[in-house]
Length: 225
Image: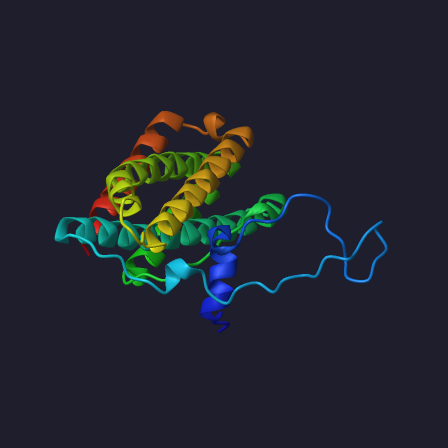
């Protein structure tokens, strides 16, 4: 089984680790562009926020531990929902939907539980039809997007306190940037699901409510386990 290195995992999971891209058209080394060629700087091996540990109160540490724990579990769950949808779509012969499924993996201690439940949710909704699969995605991404907003709100006081320090720890704003990126990704998936017919699923309201409730229960459990 392919197991990416930590560096590769970071590159695949989030753009927040990458430095800002300079504005303006790039110039390849040695290429005539009306001026001196700009050298290409190598990417840093590590973001400074990955090599530091902030000084936190017990309450702040508990908050950050819950954020990281539940987000690990949530992203893993989303991965297996899409795997289940991919399998269910393939069984129904829906090759187009199979080709549209994308997923990323992040490890979590709840891997076996999330793997089974999430895969089952994805498979069952995909077997019900494309619209049901999209309704599943819509419900999941709605809850998760709101949850990321809640996390960012809870994290704000910690960020503000950190910013006032003489030497602010870079890991905290990095975490906030990653959460914002994840939230924006979820909202993109939500928009895509609606565009692909989520609202046309049979029993959409009931299906969406049931899946949303299951997600909220999962979030509560993952925060503590």
